[in-house]
Image (tube, rainbow, N blue to C red; front, side):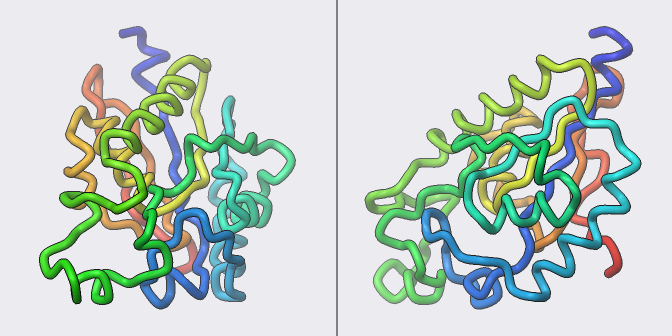
Length: 196
């Protein structure tokens, strides 16, 4: 690996708070807006991200992610890609884990099937595509997306299984950075919130 490749970083931003994220409802294809708190947190990311030079900026097409990218200063640059959409929760869309566990007491998205939704492996395939895009550019990348897909992306980056994404908690409005230590893929920064 070249020295230039070893300095590459991928910045990850989970979208700001929504009414559904605040109430722990699984939100994939439902296009909910940011709360005022979510908008404020997104704006606080702008000064931190403005000092970086990104060769690639991608966002999920959902408004909670695109609005976060706009408020963080990247609305004109962020390319929308369905590969960064949230894990498709199928018939569990809009439900909390507690509600799902009424009928499936030990259910977790990382270890159990999602009726009518995606498997972890399908999410990981999408994540690998955006990782490949980041690795193909000469410089850093910035992704605006959602909690579970970014957790699977991180596991994929580290060579772990999609299920291992359960170990990487992400807050709304959180910033994380993936990169390298020599040739090893690493987490350089995890789940920080500007102004918190």
